[in-house]
Image (cartoon, rainbow, N blue to C red; front, side):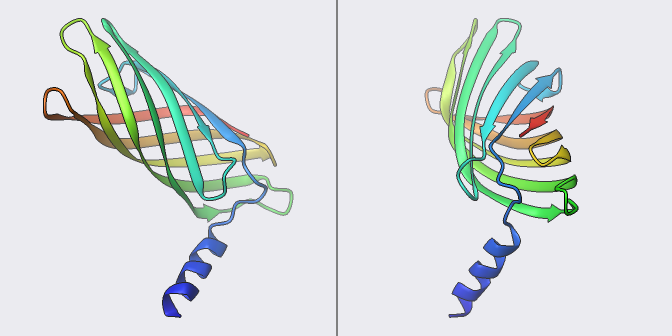
Length: 154
């Protein structure tokens, strides 16, 4: 009973208003191991993010698909749904990249945080930070990943 009450309180406190549809972020010279990147996050499923993206570095091209739970940490929007929000997502999935020296692909996991200032109920400027890593199946190694981005949430 205690567990069910705690989950209900957590889920109720983390509800987003109004319901978000998605985000688009650019990662200009602010990511590792990639130099440039772009990603799309779908927020259409309550409490779940689905994220896909492309990245590039001289001589390297990469892509990823991840999904996982989303939690609203803070929502400072007013009655017109204008203001600041803070969300955290734990994402897991698959990442791969092609390189002139060696290819890498495998399981990928990230912890992502988004701070968004909404100017209207469905348009906000978003700053995203993410860190995690990828396990390269073929070469049996772990590659770190760091990403800082700016974008729009709608």
